Length: 310
Image (cartoon, rainbow, N blue to C red; front, side, top):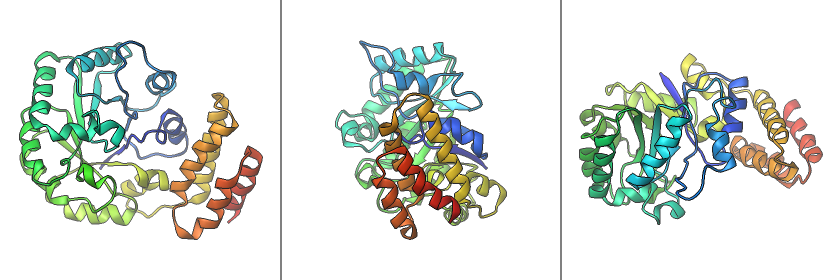
C-alpha cells in the first residue's frame, strides 16, 4: 500500500513536510498545496519554498497547480520544469468558494466540455511532463460523475486522485464509494483514493469495501495531521498512536518556523491550527482551549508540557 500526504493549504506545507520526515515514516509521495499562475509576476516567497529542491530534500514531491486556463498551464508548467520537476498535479477538486467562483478547482467540474477542451489542448502539446489530477465526483449531483469519467478516460493521466464527494458536500456528508468503484471499472489510469481516512479502523473498512478493485494507493490529509503515525500504522497493520511523539514533532515545527523568521505571533497561529486537528477529541477540549489562549511562546510551552507528561 502506497500512502500520499494530501496537500492542505497552510497545514501540510513545506515546514510540515520537512519536519515530518525527520520524525515519521510511511508516506511515499508528497504534494505542495496548490500553486496558482501569476502572469505578471513570479512565484511568491512561500511558493518558492514549496518548490525549493534543497529545502524539500528527501521527499518525492509533486507540485500541485490550480488553473482552468491552457495558457496559464503552459506558463506555469514550464517554470516548474525548469526547477527540476517532471510531474505535476492539477487540482480540480478544491471546494472553496473563492476558488470555485472563478471556475477553478471543483468549480471547473460544472462544465465537462470545457474540461475536455482543456485537457485535449494540454495533451496535444505536452510530451515531457507527467500529469495527474485530483478531482471530486461532481459539483452538486452524483449523475455528473458519468460525464466526467467519460472525459477522464480519454487522457493519459499518470494518476487520478479521487475524493468521492461533490463540491456541494464540502467535507461533510459521507463519501460516495460507488462512484469510486465505478471509476475502477472504467478508467485505465492509476487511481488513488482520498477521503475520510482518519483512523486505522477507517482504513480497514475502506479496504474491505474496495478489496475487489485493486486499489493500492490512498491519500490522507486530516487523519495524518491528527495522528502522524497513521501511515506507519497502515503499513504495519498495527494501531499506533503516541501523543508524546506528536508533541515532539510539533515542537520541532515550532523551532523550524522560528528559524525561518516567521515571528512568534505567526508561529503560534500555525501551531494552534495544527493542535486543533491533533486534539480534536473531546477529552482534550480543556487543554486545547488553554493552548489557543496562549499569546506568547513561553505560555504555549507551559501548556504543551502538560501534554508531554499526561
